[in-house]
Length: 117
Image 1 (tube, rainbow, N blue to C red):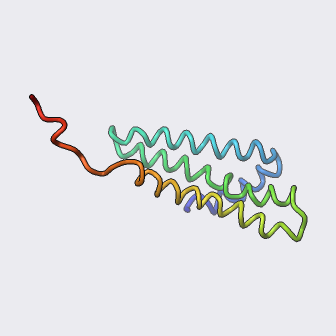
Image 2 (image 1 turned 30 degrees about the vertical axis):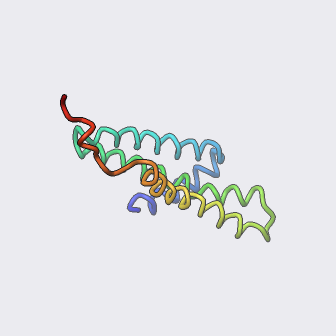
Image 3 (image 1 turned 180 degrees about the vertical axis):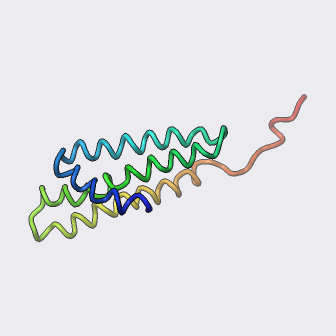
């Protein structure tokens, strides 16, 4: 959230100047780079900090995109609801990202299947 406030103004300007497609691509690429960097957590925790910084810099581009979409595609009466649905969809995706892996991956380690014969 430290990066969101100062970069919010830059991301709105970039979305207006370069278009929605380029702005969202910047957000996606930055998030992807940050996630790949965080995969090296086993080597050093500094990779997590650097990767999270990339993700935090990319977030304003993704969070400001629904307002730009609704201002271009929806009538004035529909914009509030469409912006709400677009903004909340990212939080629903984050919530599913926390719930679904817990349902798929078992937290228990089976020690008996790895015994030496």
